[in-house]
Structures are given as C-alpha cells and as structure tokens.
Length: 82
Image 1 (tube, rainbow, N blue to C red):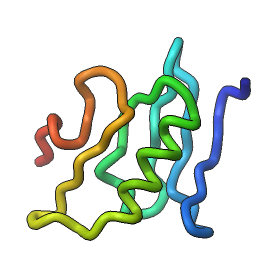
Image 2 (image 1 turned 180 degrees about the vertical axis):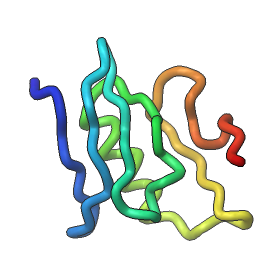
Image 3 (image 1 turned 120 degrees about the vertical axis):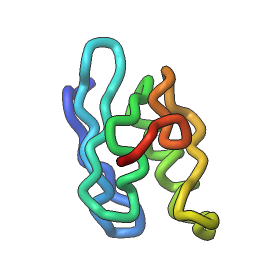
Image 4 (image 1 turned 135 degrees about the horizontal axis):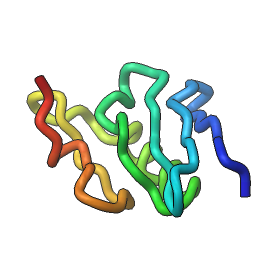
C-alpha cells in the first residue's frame, strides 16, 4: 500500500489521506469535506466510502454530518469546532 492517496468524489478533489502509523489521516481539500479534517480511517477504501456517503446526503441542519467508517474518537460529530 501507498503512504498517501488523493481521494476524488464526483471529479472533485475531496482531500488527501496520509498514512500515520496503522491508520490514515484525512486532510480536506474541498470545503464540502472539511468536516472530515483530521479523521482517521483504517484504510483508503473506508475513507472513500465515508466521503461518498457524505457527498450523496443532503446537508443536515447546522451543516453537520455523520460519518461512519472512521476509527477512534476523532469523528466530526465528536469534535468541538471554534
């Protein structure tokens, strides 16, 4: 496996996955995927599935989204912003 991946969703560069130990950290490029900034995934395929689900969903009130497939406590709904 590679140490970094560029994830594209619907021809949009969503962000970069960078290997960090046994998992991958997501770094958003497109604003619509900023909720995933710093999220950790077990593998690139889990990250892509979560980002695709996010892209297919209508925006929830307050601009928050739920993200499945991430590992650890760093999920967007668990982080405090601001």
